Length: 230
Image (cartoon, rainbow, N blue to C red; front, side, top):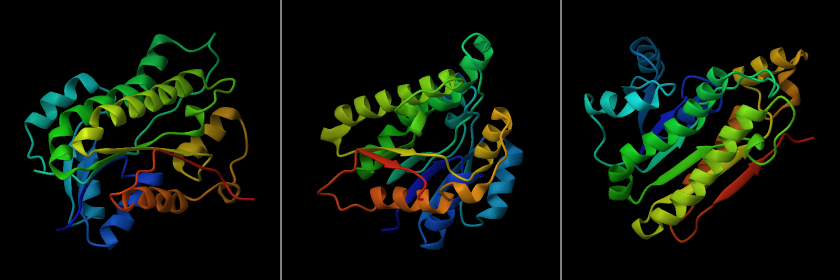
């Protein structure tokens, strides 16, 4: 039976690298896009994939959006790759800055997982959260992003305990700095020169995600940290 995966953030960075790998090996892809225009772009990039439209910056609207679209009957995995980052000191960040990052990085992954749990349970599937090194430690200027990622770790830990009896596996992957468009934006915000060769490639992180997804059923990778090699 062909494996079925739903991926957020497939249009950039780690999500793109993972979607390509899964597509190349013939798995069935469902890709979440923030709007219809982005869905058309993903459809052109992955002709065999199905697309869904839902804005992760508005988690309260996801239930309505998905209820008006055809969903897969079963899901072998839901991989949460999408995320946003805006750096700033605690004395500078506004509620809008906090809410945007918490919505996209934490509340929407929780809501999307809730909405897709029946399909995951049917397949005894896998929920994989692409977290961040910031989900393990918080640095100056990173408070809002790190808080969202610390929360994502808590979400994963609770979900794993709750869904164990249903056969649903849950993994958190914590990439260090990775050569993605988001990393280029971070360097711009930090006022630093961006050299992608200094950081791990999205393809390498995708390999670690596939390792977790492809693990035999008698084991589960719960937490996996990945950092750039020297």
